[in-house]
Amino acid sequence: MNPIDFRGRDLLGIEDLTADEIRYILDAVPPFKEISERDIKKVPTLRGKTIINLFFEPSTRTRTSFEIAGKRLSADVINISVATSSVSKGETLRDTAENLHAMQADALVVRHSAAGVPHLLARFLPSPVINAGDGAHEHPTQALLDLYTLQDKLGTLAGHTVLLVGDIAASRVARSNILAMQKLDMHVCVCGPRTMLPMGIEQMGIEYTSDFDDAIQGADAVMMLRIQRERHGEVLFPSLQEYAERYCLSAERLRRAKSGVLVMHPGPMNRGVEIAPEVADGLASVILEQVTNGVAVRMALLYLLLGGN
Amino acid sequence: MERHVKAQVMDAAAMQRALRRIAHEILERNKGATNLVLIGIRTRGVPLARRLGEHLAQIEDYSVPMGAVDITLYRDDLRGRKSRPVHSTDIPCSLEAKHVVLVDDVLYTGRSIRAAMDALTDFGRPQSIQLAVLIDRGHRELPIRADYVGKNIPTARHEQVSVLLQEVDGRDAVTILDGESGAVE
Image 1 (cartoon, rainbow over the protein chains, first blue to last red):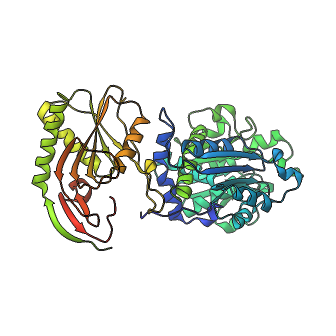
Image 2 (cartoon, each protein chain N blue to C red; image 1 turned 45 degrees about the vertical axis):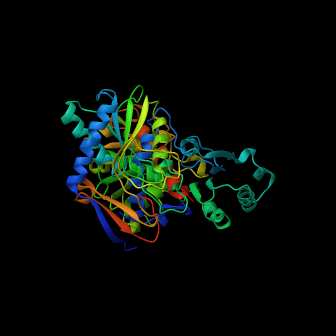
Image 3 (cartoon, each protein chain N blue to C red; image 1 turned 90 degrees about the vertical axis):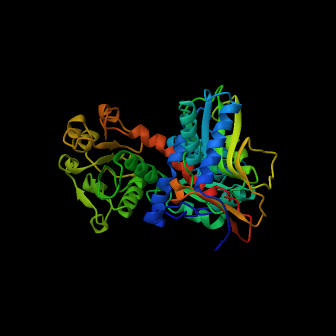
């Protein structure tokens, strides 16, 4: 593939990426994974670049992953969490962004509970803005690391079947993954209570079922999603126990799947609710590899967006 | 930009003789092949390192460990250049107490070699680093020199030295191309 130049671009969503661009990013990942396996986990590539993690929502995994990714590329990474920032004093998003730009920040990684915030900031900032999760809209780097994990384990992506299970409507991870998988010719099936399905899911060309035991048989990979209790005022299912009975990935349910099936979860997990502990820790689980790959994918992205700019 | 071939300075036979001679020189200077590690600088340094390894094996009946280093992430000139894909770095063993022979196709400004040495020192502390190049075309911008040289070719800055290798390009040849800028490989 001819080199694609991502320098200076924003990464706001999978919706903005072509299939070729996604493939190019995935192909760029392996050398960055190798750096994390060295004794000295550092290359000088982004030396002197300032990357600011602006997280308006709590995060351990994603924020740490971006911080490690930036630091392994020798960038200076600053973490701002909203509780300790002047946003709590009433400063607008635009002012926050323009202030950071005035300090010559080279890139901004943003997570916010309102969809579209990274897009708004990108309008005011000439430097790259990376969406680390905006409301229930998109979480593009999660989808990229999920796809990388799938490709690494399955060899190819096109033609394989992925089953996403759980609170699809509230999940930006699900949205980004569905978009990416469709662009790369994967077969996507979603499973969960009807109350948790986004409207118009069938029009997107995605199979839906409420029968987990049936759907799991055809899956090459099962992606379990956490129930987003904090997003809803309403009650979407009668009780946790009833949810778990129908939609928890138990060891028994896993036995119905193909041999070699991959078990995935973006984290954090509710052990015993959407996934049984022995499955999370079992041989089919690639959950921790997703985390390892997350650092490598974010390193590759930072390199592509900032390398030499 | 279409570049016009000005001259062919080495053919396949000349390249093989030069590499064989370099292999002998490496063995002479290091008094044998033990404690050597050959590391090719991507891209064309890698097949050249492999060929040197084969010559060393034939002469001394000893298999020297071989690796590859990608210097893209260590370059000092990423800004303003075409975006470059990164390939992996593969160091086969610990470099402690080893004599590393870096292998590249063309030595020009010396900046690639500086980047390769930076990359290597992130992997450990070799006993020494030596440099073998097929072509030295002059115009150093850093105080760097090769220990083993296949051929010295004085060039003008606006010229380009093109090394073609069977493994990468389908044939072996070294040619000088005329052009507008002395673009680095």
